[in-house]
Amino acid sequence: MKIAFSPCPNDTFIFHAWVHGLIANAPKLDVTYADINITNHLATSPEGLDVMKISYATLPYVLSDYALIPCGGALGRGCGPLLLTAEDKLTAKDLIGKKIAVPSERSSAYLLFRLWLAEKVPQWTGEIVVMPFEQIMPAVRDGSIDAGLVIHEARFTFHQFALTEMVDLGHWWEEDTGLPIPLGAIIAKRSLDTDAIANWIRQSLAYAWKHPQASEAYILEHAQEMSMNVVKAHINLYVNNYSLDLGEEGYKAVLTLLDRAAQESILPSIEPKLLRS
Image (cartoon, rainbow, N blue to C red; front, side, top):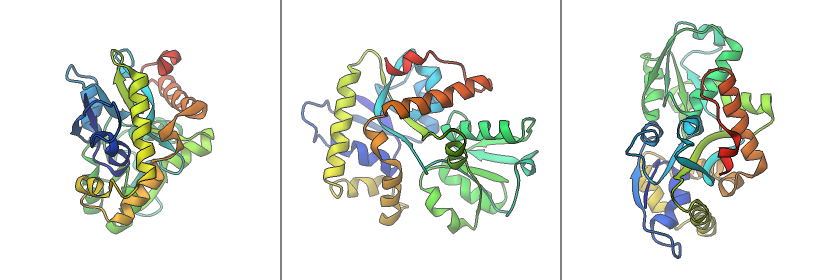
């Protein structure tokens, strides 16, 4: 079975057991490790793999061919993207005409940013630059970018680049909706046994929680720039009960995000029933 997910600690932690053949009766995985911008575009291309980790913001473009798997993804509280600058005390209006780096134009981080901008500066104009997320903070620090939208472990490391948190978009979302933040989704081709795939992912996650040290070498192999303290903080933040099952609150958060985006004409609308079928 061909699968693509990021080399970030939350994904390698969740999928370690399955990747290493530790789940009974689960098929062998052929893994592609890829940045979210790559998987978002891969999912909408003819080369799309069997199972992929993508942004929830890409979901409306692929729901006809791929089913949302209700586990293994990234959805939670206190884990949203940050908008960073090299200057203090900037307001949303200060971003007019500025150059802003984002990890993907189809990322959930960018979608949250667009929704925030629509509320704060409806007539915003400026330049959006897509770049790998690990390049964003250095670009903001060095002044080639005015502001950067960051995800993942940047939440724990941006102070090392002497940057300032302008807004925590996850906090804004939670305050506004009372719901957790939908970030990354696991999808699988509808022609496959999606219930079985969900079961294998849950078994892999259960193994990871029961044997947390078993995956350390594998995780560090794909996240070599991180200290173990940052790795553990990353996993503790992004791997949670929603990783095991979205539940009613998780589905509500996803539908609310996609509905708002459709209302702002940012994303196409979806049939809600497709989220569960």
